[in-house]
Image 1 (cartoon, rainbow, N blue to C red):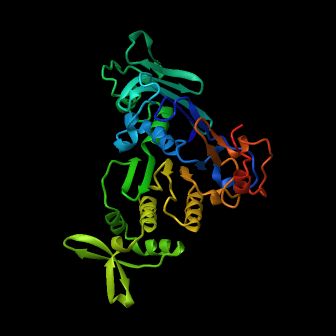
Image 2 (cartoon, one colour):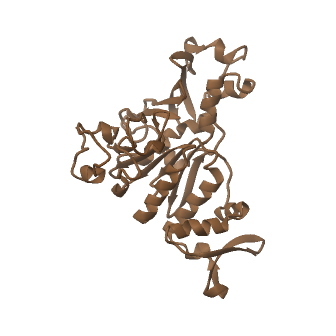
Image 3 (spheres, helix red, strand yellow):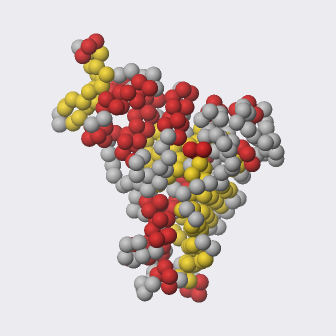
Length: 370
């Protein structure tokens, strides 16, 4: 699991900003915590503080450690902070798998331009590799063995190179970290189109994925639970599988895509990712997950994710109605400002309890930056 993350000089983050997923002791909603780490997080913050950039930053690791879909270019422009365009960007990840801790640090000049990488297993440094200084290249025999590591191209991560060229599971901790990274998924739904990063590198149509799954009736039920009622059926039109909506006992019909609202299309996207990936992914980041959703639908999505304990998830939102101990906890809610990300429990001196109205406290300024 991702236990902590930090980044500096990336996009709008001039100074280092970090998020810690360590959980507190609460007797309620324990299913949102796994091995002492927040498994279901929700991030709040005003417009422009960098919630979207945080997701982009976390998924930078996908670009050089995996062969999965990289972040869309629109989200990786202005890579370095414009106040320090000549400085490197610094990334820090802390992973925890049971009792094991992995710390991975690296620096870049651009999304595909590595400068240095370091890797620590349970407090022991196993890699410290500087691409432009041969005197600063340490790789422990424990991790590289007799593998000849002589890289020139800094676009290829030394860690990825070692992992790809060692026999399977030669270094179990490295395998755990790489497997986690290969199964991370970021996505967002916008009126002008959808985008995703990680997990796969396939291009697919949502309707085709639904057709292949054979779960059109389950999708009907999912929409019904969101108070959206359609009678759906696939038809073959010009060799394609068209999802049709039927009315008047089947006498009238129209393509689902021509009838669905922006919010319904966002729910369609969520459902397709759910049946396609949610049983395989390790980490999910949905940016502005409920931008087009009614507050009741937003809550139902959160509850759905809460029931799926097999992966860690992070949502960004402006919906303070979700800041409610019925469906979350004070250590699972984070407030983001220009220079910090802090859980509610760490943003106040008040001892937060299950009976507290978190949204009311938030709006009254209880969690303002101190």
